[in-house]
Image 1 (cartoon, rainbow, N blue to C red):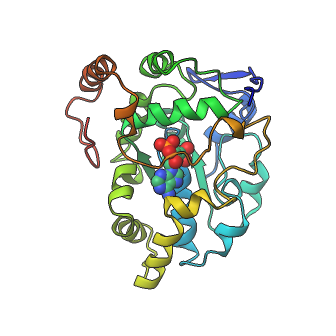
Image 2 (tube, rainbow, N blue to C red):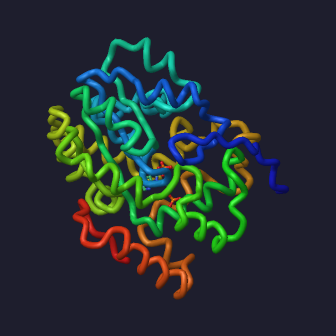
Length: 290
Ligand code: A3P
């Protein structure tokens, strides 16, 4: 099909650009002064790092394996985005335990979190796979700029001028909160390698132990195949003007290492050099093959 028009609105906040379709200065201000509750659980990610996957895992964890909420309520209502314009009421009205999602960098959100006892789950993914996934997502998400070629997009990703800013700053910023927040770091790759074991560690962190049957239900429901077919998480409910479904699926591949099919040897060498400069010997929760 013919590619649809872009919604060319950009909001700039704290030095990063964000889709203006989803954010205003007001919605961003609401986020940075948000009164977190001790019972809040915040999923923090750079885009395309496994956000939706973690939303689903936590839904199943807190429902103790009951699939009904995951099958009947869209993910953005179960775990609303703190900084986006649509969710203020959903966040304020509920008396229940809140699951909250954010893509904001730690430097803007950490002050509000540090004043609370909210728990944070940070999901990181191999930045090469993030770049590939983000590139494909730009092609269908009409609220993001036209990515151009993969090479053009990768250059902007490396410079940190893509929407949501630099991957390196995002990951380093949230890693620096280790001593200051009650935070659980996990990688997409760990989820991929051992979903059940990782869910078990998560449940211990959240003080919500799960039995073997619940873990089995969680593992089944949070598989890529099941999530790809679940309209409550696969974004097929989003109108075509916002996500052009003819350009691809949100649940695209769900694999580790797809970058090998996208990066040229030169792009890879440049990226590795930059990664070493930016990340050095920083201790990450899991290493990814670069
Ligand atoms: P790909 O584009 O590489 O397929 P986010 O939710 O942060 O936007 O991340 C989206 C990425 O997570 C997409 O990656 C998507 O396919 C992948 N994903 C979502 N659910 C998944 C699952 N259950 N297992 C593996 N990958 C999953």
